[in-house]
Length: 272
Picture 1: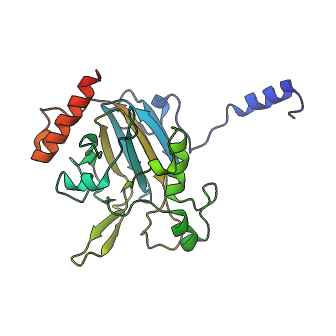
Picture 2 (picture 1 turned 60 degrees about the horizontal axis):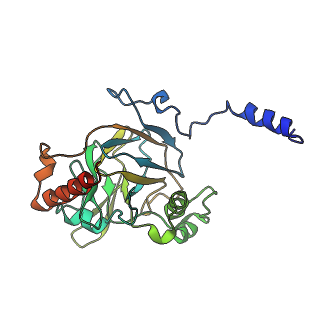
Picture 3 (picture 1 turned 135 degrees about the vertical axis):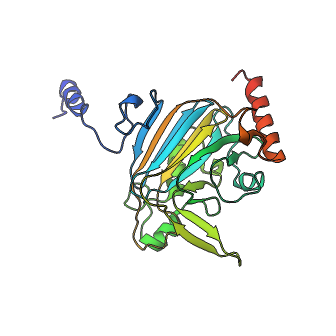
């Protein structure tokens, strides 16, 4: 009963002990899936199939995505948390390293010539920087529904909800990259579905600047399966150090070298 303030209070407190497998672990160190060798976590969460999450993270944070079932698909958008007008630029992300396929060592670039994050670990190899995420129109045509609160939410709609929590509008959403469901390009330019590498794969990002990260865990738009199939996504983050001159990737290409120099210059000017 919530007919009085006291009854409403008691009802709210009675619900306080409830939990769900699809929620952040608080404190993060309480995660039952803590990565081996990591003592102190700053973020731990299991994202539901068809769910989303978002977080502001410090420079030097290491973010690990895990696909426990082989059916997760982590669509990711990145922003400079200090100035969100600087955001992921997929075209530059595939141009600067001269490589369209995402994998270990691949920098994720902004349109300002800086590295927002670097892929520093990857046991999957099945990712995508071509297609972006699903839209409401796409899901309506394929699944018959696309409402964000319904059984078949589109990635774009979930990104809109996550972005709004940080004062960003739909026009502020750039194309995303995705992890764990791969696409290749055939010799004639046709997209070829590679799908998943299987259960237990992981991918790790290193934040090179303070990051706002948005994640939507929804089926890839080119997934050929007729049903809305997506598995849980585990996310963990912990403090580390950003890329520096001693790292091999710092000078992987002349273009990447310049991008890392631009990134360090920006960070040091702000005392980061």
